[in-house]
Image (cartoon, rainbow, N blue to C red; front, side, top):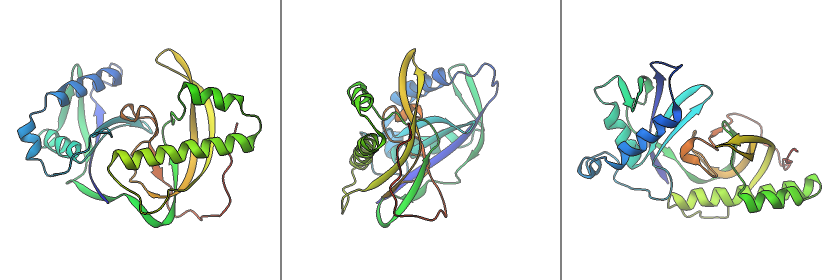
Length: 233
């Protein structure tokens, strides 16, 4: 399966006053009002409905907008002829951008791919978090998180209307930590994993993907082993 993707890297004009939350809110309002006729004339003809078509995230200190299918067309039009993007009170210059909408492969490729989480992975809902805490010993937690990761990869495939030709497999090497998000203490995970699913860089899995959580990047040229990765406490 081919995903149509377009990426912008933005630089806030006033970093000290820049609000990512306000920027995302203004972007969401603008997208909701985006004219449907213009969208239909955008290059990608395929639409996705269950996966965020545009994701706004901060990755390694960079503010990134990534659009998929109809989202790619919207970002391409937003970036044409204007070196700046303004959302609410937040003005940003376009530091870099794709020259055009690019095609990226997604799906089962017959090989194994290794990925790292660039941003925290929100893997567990409240019920699953309790189950994780109640498990004793690393093997039990390893197995539990591998099931969660497999489920999230299947959800990603389904949300992009992709039906795998064979079962998805994965092995995980992740560690958890506690963070405060929206005034709540939650458990997030970082680390890496291997899977037979090819995923374009900077897509996300898990909860709150549109807010930048669970962002992935493939680890290039790393030797694959057959050993399963453990979950680190």
